[in-house]
Length: 591
Image (cartoon, rainbow, N blue to C red; front, side, top):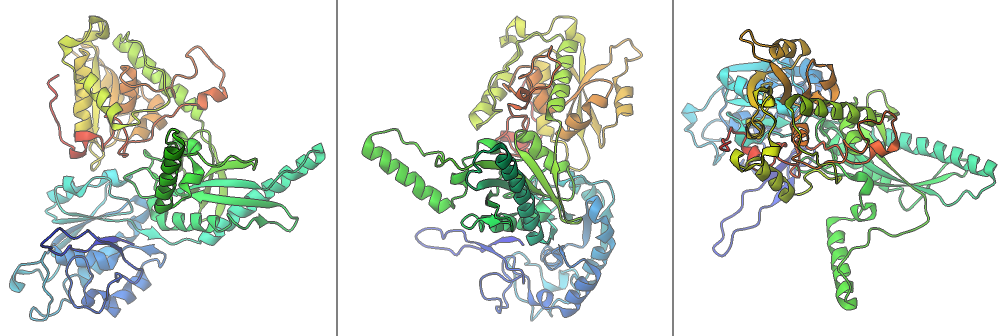
């Protein structure tokens, strides 16, 4: 399913509004599909109605996987691409050769004669100069972990003029790629009803056990419990996520009951970490604050939410009270808030569990058709990352007091600007107490820029280098496609000239590398966010609730938010969509 924009018509008074129309499964838009014009993104009839093409797709590719072959062929023809590159994640590589053969066989081959071919504003070349076939098709074989690994640079080196990236959402803006790129999400159709039935059966059994325990204790069973589900998943299952939430909400007015009479109600929302799709979760980016979410407000449609705000404002104006919106109706009905995740693995779910450590997490595997409860050692993770940060501070001789208060991390753009401005102050304006001692001034810290596709953002590298130079710390920049302990051990050793070597690293690649594997390296390897914490540039209570001398793991360690915001618009200067970081260019901040 793709979203297409209709070209706006010219107006003598004011510009016409931009109309967004969602395509139907058959490929036609809400407008009449009988028109022969192919302006914009409409797939022309020689592709849309090609029975041979539809037959090959249905017999060679899995029916539940939408590879958007028709759209891809039209994009190739519409852009006159002759050298095409395909990039797949590991799980879809098995279909690479088949898709490549289909594209080579059908692109350009069934175009109508030039005199009959409808005109397109994007394709103004004379018919005689238009390609008649794909001259070369390349399959990029390097490992692809996510959309951050889109390898337009390698595709350009191969002489390609179009790159098709499969299986991930558009994280790297198309304005930043060196050649035209097309993202194909590869939506997968799953048995949503079976997933919903599994959720119903699981909580009905829990409700039955709860009522039995209450009965044995001689206490009242109480009213039917309400399960507030935050439904999320990977981008391949985004349609199934929304459908699952809708089906769960269909039980909001009618209770789900078992044969023994146990009742339970469901309410479901699909949270969003913008600019990602609703419900979409990455390994480094997930919706946060779900435990504090006003669930009743989230259940409303945008129109209902606006009406609610108007009513609250009118009531406040009539009474002279402060304009506030009630945070849901208070009642005595027991409620349990959970995360319901649709994916075949844990990696993306772990990001949601890190962002929302107090919520229970259930994962439905659409292939094994099982619903399992997942847990994450949040306390252990925070302790390991706290120890790494303290080790870096000790190694560099940093004596600045750490900012440990507050539970939010750059919750607004203004907060992020304050952090960035404090880092970019000229070195001579800083107090002497903020500088490391003279022995630490000779310390060297390494900055790793990930080169696996577009994993590393040069703009973030510039900010980190400015932060380190402003504190009098030398830096060395290393480009690595993948980061291995043995390689960093060799790079961290003292030099032959008597240098002390690299005492710590900060990597601009994947934050999860530091979280999941940072404690296996010979020296600390921090994420960009953790470096800002180490220098006291950001307040974050998540890492400092438990004091360093404590050895017992308590529930207090679950308070505070460790941010998973690497690709959100609300993150700080360590994230990809913050301010000038979106341009992904090396900048000099004069430090």
